[in-house]
Length: 407
Image (tube, rainbow, N blue to C red; front, top):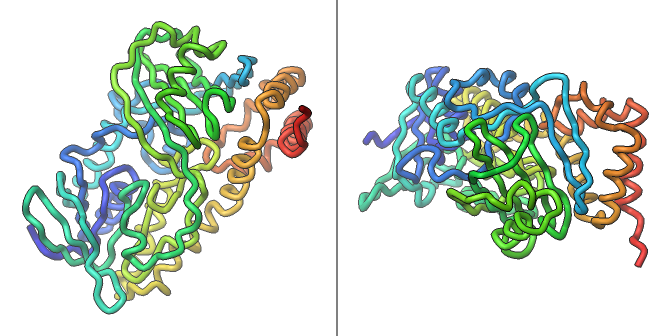
């Protein structure tokens, strides 16, 4: 094993591998350390992704075996089971096999020259004169050092390396505890993702049902407090709608994972160091989805790293451009999504039922067909509220979330 690489990436998930891919394409020597023996294992999320934004990133169409289904919209259920169906004019999202998706991006990176070491855990950073100069890693019983000009932390959430890199104020980390499962014997409509709202079933977040073409489905939820597995059982057997879909379901596998929803950390860089993806909380506070945001930030990281290599300057002052560009990309969207998350957390279930009724009454589902942006949600809202019906719905939601409940 060589003891030097221009760039070391910690983590072989989508953000880490996409950083490596964008660097390797430019002829930059990059080495990726993945602690697990296999890329994409264990699985961590449902892999529900915007088709439009995958195309923008040059990753769509994907190989057929990776895409498990495509969706025209969503069925959203209020706590008491009232349904709002949103159908767009074209397929809007897809769900991917996360293991194969992660492997696909890693393979593209390797094809362009990135080097991967699997089953290799980065134990700590190598620091010298206030700069990150590489990593100390362990593979089985062997411990070794690899020096680098820049280290990229893409280890996911919760991250271990930020404090060690000198990033002591990474913001307030707000997160929910999630459970993601795959199940069979599901009764669901293939063209729609289903979303279940309500504090009784997923306090602090929501639950989901994502059907696959093979007859199985991905189901899950996340909660701010409590045991997510117990809440999933409650959803499966007691929710007025979900219980009809899931009562006969047999869970084939499941995984537990925290989801960061507190917004992008205020500083994801230091001397010789950048953080991307979940490690930097580049995740939508509304839905917990982070793949598209993380991939966009990975591209920015590669741009900034290339300039730093060209200038032979790896100081925080130079790498600060990474944070500036991220802020420019998503500052308004992140603020809007944080505001929506806070309102969702405040609104009582009865008012959420009333909001869905209001949307049905004003036929909101007919007004959103042309708005297909689901990742940069602040921009999407600005465009959408020009429609009078959507403006009324947003006003209703804001009032419902702000006014105190009647006892």
